[in-house]
Length: 93
Image 1 (cartoon, one colour):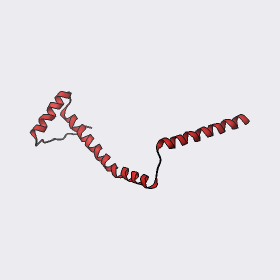
Image 2 (cartoon, rainbow, N blue to C red):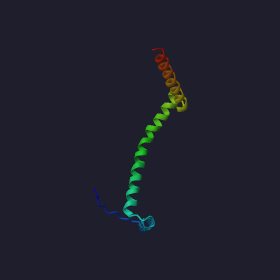
Image 3 (cartoon, rainbow, N blue to C red):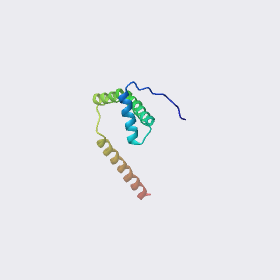
Image 4 (cartoon, rainbow, N blue to C red):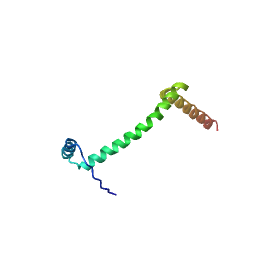
């Protein structure tokens, strides 16, 4: 669905820069504005996540944590042990 909206530029220089950039990119000015609004909204969403991320970092520092590589290695070893146990049971059967 297409919706129309009128954007009033109170800054003539900004309007001119937009039109020049649109021509340079072979795009409609409305596409550039839509992209800019989309990016702005996404940055707002990211900004809302920052307190959650900081809270997780603080909890990690307080309670401790370990690097992913260490946990990944432990998982790989556990999988290998289970595979070896399964093979051993299969051979004995």
